[in-house]
Length: 49
Image (cartoon, rainbow, N blue to C red; front, side, top):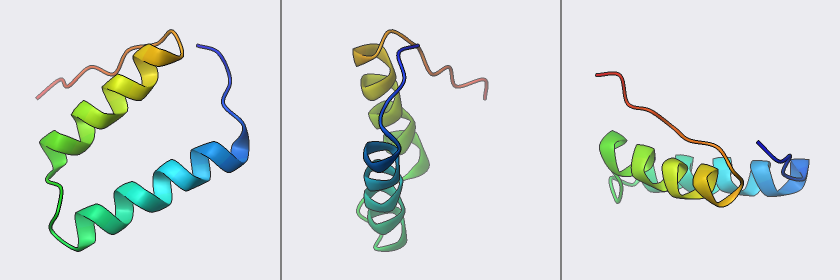
């Protein structure tokens, strides 16, 4: 997977944490968001549950 800049990763993490804590996103939605981001950079997130 291509590397993201540390600042970008931190921004994504902060946003997803905020959305989760304010109940705007559920875990399944977060996994979908991460999957979209990972695919953009050549990787893939797999939900094993």
